[in-house]
Length: 156
Image 1 (tube, rainbow, N blue to C red):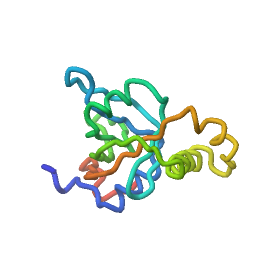
Image 2: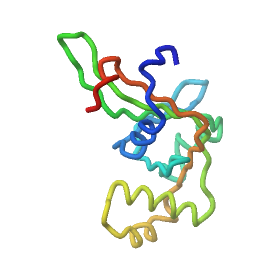
Image 3: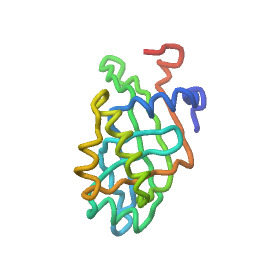
Image 4: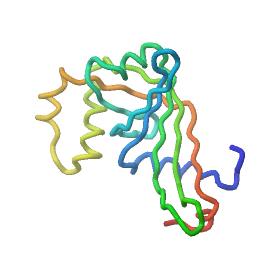
C-alpha cells in the first residue's frame, strides 16, 4: 500500500468484514470486462460466503476465472467543505469456488441467516431453499484496509 500510514490494522479489517452490511464483488466477465455486483455476504474469519441462483452471470464468471475481489465500505462521509470524504474500507482478494458439500452449503446459508436474520431459527428456510440456491465460498488470499488520513487518530 502506497500510503502505509492509512493502512488499517488486520484486527480492524476483520471487524469490518464481520460487521459490513453488504459487499461489492468484482469478477472477470466476458471479453475481460469487469463484472461488479453488490451482494449480501457472511465472513467466518477465513472465507466469505455468498449465495446466488444456480445459473447466471456470477457463475459464468467464476467458471471463466475464479480470481475475484470484494470491497466492504465501513464509512464514507462526504465532507463538502473539504472536498473529500472520510472513508474506511476493506478489500479482499481471493478465489471463488462453488460449494458442493451439503454440510458446507448449510454452514454458508446459516452464516448468512445469522448475520441478516439474527435470533430467528433458519432451519425451515434453509430446508425450503437448499436445492434452489448455490453457495459460493471465496477463499481469501489477501486482505487490505485503508482509511482517510483524517481518521487515523479518530475511531468513529
